[in-house]
Amino acid sequence: MDILHRASKRSHLPFFGTSIRTLGVLSVIGLFIALLVFPSSAVADDMQDAVDQAQSQLSAAEAQMEAIVADYHATEAEAESMQTRIDETAAAASQAQQAVNEGRDELGLVALSQYRASDSSLMLSLLLNATSFDDLLRQVTYFDAVMQQKADLIAEQKERVEQYNQLISELNAQKDAQDAKLAELEERRTEAQTLVENAQSQLTNAQGEQASRLAALAAASESLGNTTTQEETTTSFDPSWNTFSNDSTNNSNSNSNSSPSPSPTPTPTPTPNNNTSDDSTAGWKTGIASAYGGSSDPSTPNPGTTATGARCDDNSMGVAVPMSLPGYRSLFGHTVEIKYGGKTVLATINDCGGMGNGSRALDLQPGVFKSFGASTCQAWGLRTVSYRIL
Image 1 (cartoon, rainbow, N blue to C red):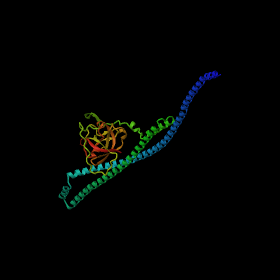
Image 2 (image 1 turned 135 degrees about the horizontal axis):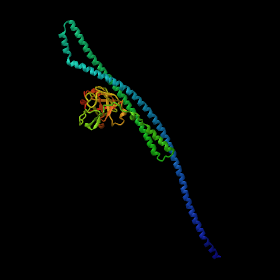
Image 3 (image 1 turned 30 degrees about the horizontal axis):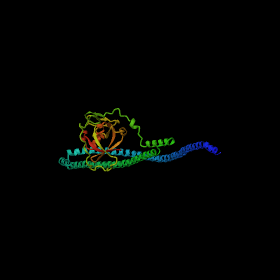
Image 4 (image 1 turned 45 degrees about the horizontal axis):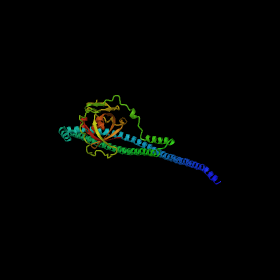
């Protein structure tokens, strides 16, 4: 029996060993499955949390973008309204400037007659040539009338200059206020770009609806400041344009051949003599200004026709801008304020040219450089001026 019992125990040992080994394998497999199943569930929860957070972030970004866009368009409308007032003031100032120029010419004729016959010599002539006392009284009365006319002309010219300076001050104040509004627009645009960049960095794994919402957010940001008008692409040159010339001596296209080659060193801006009341500095640029047109420029007809169809002659108050300037066509019709030697002159942008491959900022027509005291293109040459486009 003992032997049988021991034999029986030995015969069951392999079965139990196999069962234990099988159970162990099944336990390992079960554990492995558990490790796969439960963590996957946790990751899914985390992903859902990420999606929920992405939706929340996008909703907040969309609300913020909506406020930015509304603020941007409101500020843009205000800046455009300011531009309307600037244009009106610029037109009034241009008329006042024309009156000042006409008064200057009239006083020039008076000064010429004064040079030819001084007041003292005229009075002496009246006394010596009077045939009678009555004749002397008439001559003296005439002399007084002439002197009074001269005094009136001088007084009227002073009033015109004062009115012009007041309009220039008003114009500069309006332009400074508009520049501040344009700076606000740039801040709003930068804020929108930053908002999109932050949303993109936080939602790099966003897919489906979140991705499309993020794209819409980016599109809203890109729309700010990208209000390029059709004027730049559709504005054509006047078919009778003849003030553009090929400056072969300088190996570049230019509106004026009056400057010798090589080009002289530009005359720096003289110290202001306080002839104007303006003290604005915002938005101003400094650049080289040349001169062209009129009877002193042999390279262009007189009168000539500018790129916009405007007349260019000895009294025209226009300027040209370089064609290398981005968007130069959109500047046609704008008023540019130019400072030199303490004087402020308004001109209209109505022409363009190579202008030394863009090395010059402005090309002045005769009425403009004459307002600064130069009589010819050659007398003006190249000078450094301050300017800003209104």
